[in-house]
Amino acid sequence: MDELVEGIESETSEVNERLYNIRYDLLQIYKALEQKDKFDLAEIEAVFTDASLHFPGQLKKKYEDLISFNRQVTHERNVALRARRKALEEEQAGLLSRKSDLDSRREKHLKILRNHETFGKFKALQREITDQKSQLFYLEQQREKLEAVAATAREAREVERDRGRVVDEIKTMVTRPNPVFRRFGSIFNSYCQRVLERDGLFFFNVNSANNFDYRIDLSLRGQASVPSSQAEGTSYKKIVCALFDLALLKTYEDAPFFHFVFHDGVLEALDNRKKIVLLDIVREQTKSKKVQYIMTLIDSDIPRDAEGNRVEFGPDEVILHLHDGGDQGRLFRMSEF
Image (cartoon, rainbow, N blue to C red; front, side):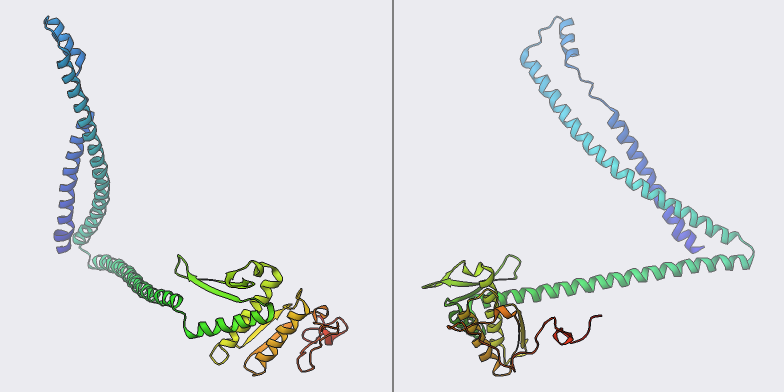
């Protein structure tokens, strides 16, 4: 009974009062929008003519300005009235829906109050409790989701702050290279000098997305800091990338980093001197047993010396010969399946 009187009936009264005010306001707006501008300059001129009075041009101009001003004000008023009408109609629709819900609840409560059978009242109240528990469960789920969203938003803000700190560190690193970067640059440059007789260039910057953009190049002969287009060729690009890998592994050979690299066909299309120098670098670097190096090549890519003789690999360097002469020539030394 308390819920019926203090809750439902009270809110229904407020909704009805608001609906009455809305309907009254809408009625006034409809009437205002139906009114037309009835001022007619031709009728004024006719009155002056009938009275045999002179209608001066200056006075006519003032009337025309007044008519124009009146039309402008009327247009602006109508625009405001239509916007207000739309807002009131939307509010009215929402209130009508709410009133329908309140009427339904009111009817249900009255039915319970008027029911003289105790068991009937119990069943009705039990159903209402069940509905309220379902609604409570739904609201608790929504609250948990909102809390999860809020937690995610906090994490996102924290990650964004961390990202800003990392970006600042990256920009500082770009402007002031650390000892590791300088050591890598020195090794990479020495490898390029030995194999390609050019300085190896490696430089990077921070792009508009605050990520690294880096470039690997070779210098022009005699101009150590000027990039050339030579590294754009397929064979040179391949060898420059291989030297980059080796220099990186050399720089981090005593650090927790990758300690192996695989190069497929890296000797392809290179002249014999470059092949021999590259293999010398690989042998020097793997001698310490800190790096595992894997290379694949076909028989025609084996380097030759100045007299044209094949420079063979040692028996401890060749892990596998691939051929079509049987299962031993397969990668895993097993039959087809």
